[in-house]
Amino acid sequence: MNPRADAGVRQQTRRRPPLPPTVDPVNCRIHRGTNEIGATCIELEADGSHIVLDLGLPLSMAAGPGVPLPRVEGILARKPDPTLLGVLVSHPHPDHFGLLPQVADHVPVYIGATAGRILREAAFFSPMGLDIEWAGHFEHRKPFRLGPFTITPYLNDHSGFDAYGFLVEAGGRRLYYSGDFRGHGRKKAIFHQLLRKPPEGVHVLLLEGTHIRDEADGTEQGPSEMDVEADLIDTFRDTEGMALVIFSAQNIDRLVSVYRAVIQSGRDMVIDLYAATMARATGRDTIPQAEWDRVRVYLPRAQRARVIRERAFERTSAVRPQRIFPEELVARRSELVMLFRASMCREIEAAGCLDGAKAVWSLWPGYLQEPSGERLQRWLHDRGIPMVVHHSSGHAYIPDWVRLAEAVSPDRIVPLHSTAADRFDEFLPRVERRQDQELWKV
Ligand SMILES: [Zn+2]
Image 1 (cartoon, rainbow, N blue to C red):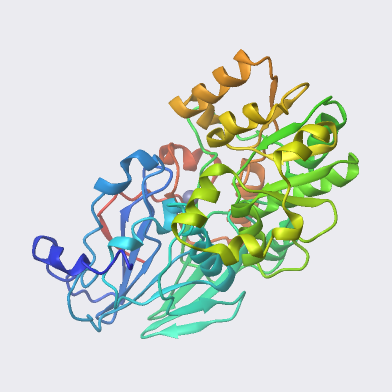
Image 2: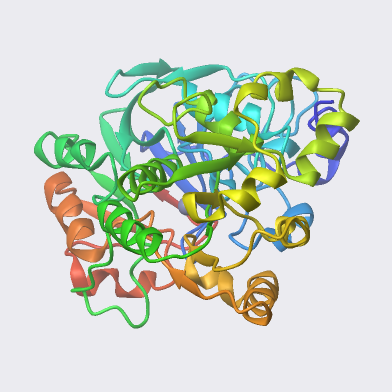
């Protein structure tokens, strides 16, 4: 069922007058995201038409169902509003697409082709997915037009796959929205290309600043994706029993890091059906696939129940030759690295394969302070399973972040996606802070 089907009924309470007319050709309103990480929503208006860049949930998923849509004209209208030309989703993370299920069906939504496939396939397994009709897809550095806007997507190095920044041109004005990016992942070559050949003549740079925090001093460097791979190799070699790695199935860079570390430590990798499906959705033969040597697929109870409930048996048949069952998990525990989730605790313990096990937390360490993270740590501790953290941020550390701003060299920099937007001007010139909802000229 399409979750957007009943969205139109709410329009009565959401109507507001269109953006006021202006002599200047391009207006911007950041509905949300100037003072927080996530919930990003940017509206641009030119010549009576408008587009929306991202439509995200606040970072805390707990806030999900109750979050109201930003008041964008036409986004809930029963009939198509010809002035709303589209919503452009920079990448498949909920803090950028999570409000789309509330949007009226007829609103055109654009995303990268692979990102769209990832979300569609993820929808079977997780609320982190989304199955809608996409109006079109981005190609790296290929401009396209929507009314008065010319949009050029720039592929980003980010933990979310198929992520983009956007150069938006209209009425002689140029705005570059950085999207979420880093310079230390498996696509760092793309970041370096962006530094060498940045969008030119940019008036306004909307810049994400995840690592600009109250305590940041500007010199912080953290582990790169390649450092994570090296740390994983050491840990896998150093683990007597099974290595349990907790990471996001949609973090394809991390899947590659784990696989490469598995091979270099002489082990085999056990992924679940969700991760196998995500790898296939990338459509890339450079990404580890279920049918590769040294890769096996375990079907956790929750996923098995879902397959049965939805009668989606083609999903299990597709991986039948690669399936691994509890007896083999026990017998070969010292040769395996397993993608692990908190929801698998009971069955893995019941299988009896935890002797000598070690856990690797390979997600944002902040989640460990949340109740579910604390519960998992207690569970591991009670069973004498040590845990180490090997993680690399999906966002640029400050030195790379400064490099991007200097390469683009815009007239003005508007902070976004940060908990310390008031500190941007300590690191960069020409910073101009904006507030949520404020209407301003590009
Ligand atoms: Zn984000």
